[in-house]
Length: 216
Length: 217
Image 1 (cartoon, rainbow over the protein chains, first blue to last red):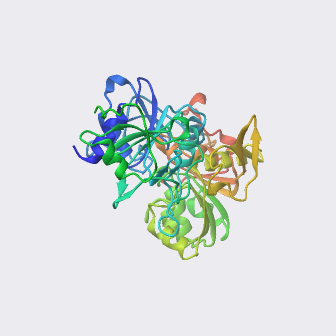
Image 2: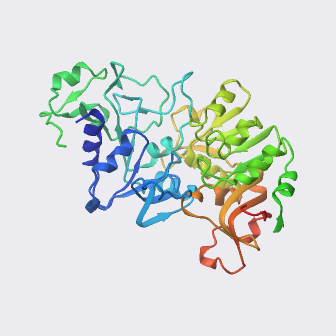
Image 3: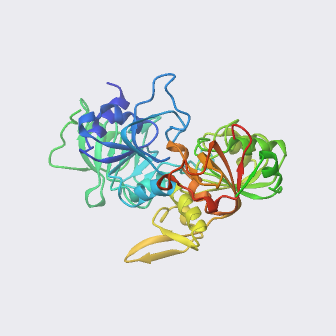
């Protein structure tokens, strides 16, 4: 199983029946592949849709039915559409149960940076700041390290997405939570030891009494 | 509401005007109005639009033709030309969170001076803004946003100007149709009055000033 699949499968376990869920671009998008339809999770696309379905088959695309990246998607029976003020009312107003976003850095207190690398990448924050400020639970789905550098850092040196800490970080090596405002190692990926996670993590991690292996 | 040709409508927009353009990555964007802005070379535009779409599509066409001098948007990462023009300081870009963008426009159309939002507190977005505490929670004061013209794309329009939108092409169109001095609309289909049921009208007719009647508008 590759790193992205481990992350996506583990995040999928966090979704509860009937949840309204917003998935970001990249690894978060993959989460939907591992959510059983019986769970009746509603996926929101912030450009104005609840009830997104799979990517349509070739020839079945509708030019006025797209995801937040402008790519064709489908709408499941029972879907609903709305304008952007409503869409972000849902997000900021705490009506979205779970948002899953990618990350560049998460620090020891759970602060996320994911929208800008000054001087290098200035695309704009899109909906990320509203999602992190307003969703009930914020889950970051990202690789543990990039180019050998830990993305779980002592303190973010990239601009923050929100001053509100995230709820959970799921990486290819570990699940990290922030009880009491401190990064805490909750689970390790299959075949990865606690020591290995600690060795590649810049932030100090609090250890629970037991650190089970992810069930995926 | 007056029915006009796309040429007449764009002739009313002076160079240097401020325009809001509906659409999300070019979906729900009045393409024919943008094509005509390019043809009539309306330069030095102040554009308010969710994103810069992609080259050749939606608002991206205005960047292809270097007609934009200021842009207020939430994300321009998928248009390299808009990025280059921002980095070369040919276009002054104000990037704001998408929910804040929607609410500032909504406020502009609803007679509000602005809104209080928790989004951006403690980040770069808060710089230079008033922070106000309500019941112990911090909010940013985000001021209303309006423009001289709103360019809106609907799915259905009737000859009174009632509008209905389809699927994800609704996005910012209804809020923008409230927030400009002059509202110009293209529609996929123009239908007789009464075809859009009262409950299905999303933008009521009195908000629309001009409806483009050229075919395929």
